[in-house]
Amino acid sequence: MKQYVSVTAKFDADGNILPLKINWDDGRSFDIDRITDIRYAASLKAGGAGIRYTCRIKQSEKYLFLEDNRWFINNEKEH
Image (cartoon, rainbow, N blue to C red; front, side):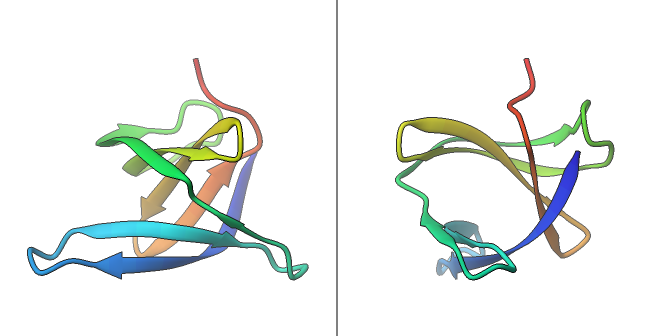
């Protein structure tokens, strides 16, 4: 299921976007510990496509997508 979230991100000098933190509407926020992959991909579970960031948050790996200037995260990692 696609869940739109607010993201704190950094833009580097080359124009690359690097997400730093995921912010939920209920006030929770989670730092992204590491980004292990960045690629254009489709979300098979939630639908849609965009830049997919494979993120390590605490000890869990999640897919975070940037699609048409909106961020979304799947409830579960795609296989």
